[in-house]
Image (cartoon, rainbow, N blue to C red; front, side, top):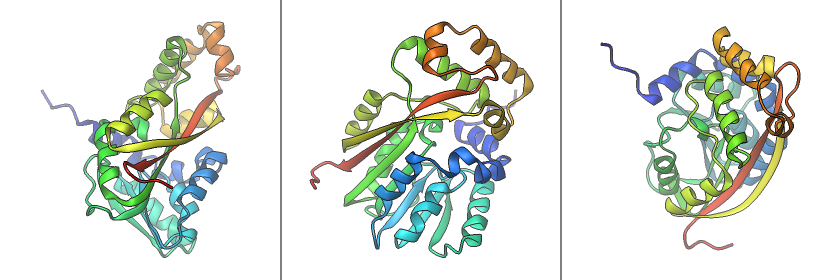
Length: 259
């Protein structure tokens, strides 16, 4: 029997062929959450790390305001697309690095800011990734992370995770704020301020961006159409399957650091 691929290998294969779609993705290229994360990361003269950079939109937004940005991702195809787009935008201070977030190939205390957006729900071992982020931050550095969060009640959580997994088998989990605070604290961070947004997902582009197979699309639609009223209401579920997600940005600093 052929061995099953590792989670990282599976994630890389899922996204490698979708690089251009993520660079061009409207929902990834804009939004209040992107603007807020870019402002948080805009530390003059700092070296910044963009964890799980995907289409590179955090990198593009923060690069003009810092000394350097390293865009890190599992997918070399994604990184090649990011490097090409950074070149087109004249961002000469952008470098790319292929690696897992759980084993960063950098020296301790290398970066003044570590940023991540819409990546952590793919990470196979979030605590390990957060420990690595802590290790590579300077003592006065800061971590800023944006991701989809589950709404809390188990009924809503279960439906959200099912849609996400059917759409993209590399999905692991959309965590809640309490889970993030606990994992950050256990990794040596002091969790700080939180901001929240509601972000609409256009269903046709959501599945097209990932190349979701028709059978999986049909399964998502079946679940949506059978969803009880609390699910339909919370996610503002529309006739074509479009829906609205809860998105959170959380800031954190290493233990012992105060403003």
